[in-house]
Length: 116
Image (cartoon, rainbow, N blue to C red; front, side):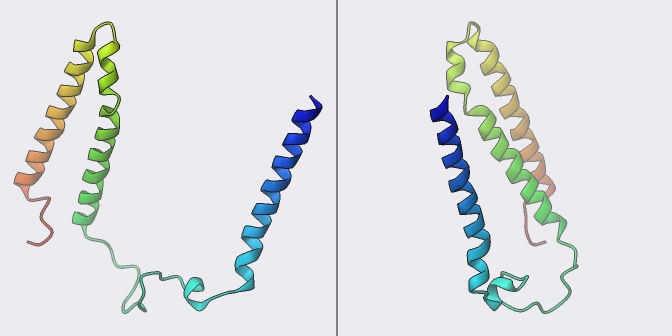
């Protein structure tokens, strides 16, 4: 029990020191580029409150959707060891078919084109 307390104290001490150093060290050398709110490399020309294009959000949502779809299908090879593997493969196939139909619909509607 005594060894566990010593290890916890050491961990908390090291964590506190690292947290304090990470807050204290950047204050030693402030830089104008680091302190500026824009990180794109050039000064803003217009207002920063202009709305984004809806196509940007559509592409971002499609990317997230297909990224999550891949994450959901990653454990599929281990579905082979289940008592009824056909059920998991049927569900995975139905998800893939549904997403493919949605992608084809989006493509036909012209949602994937940047310029009109």
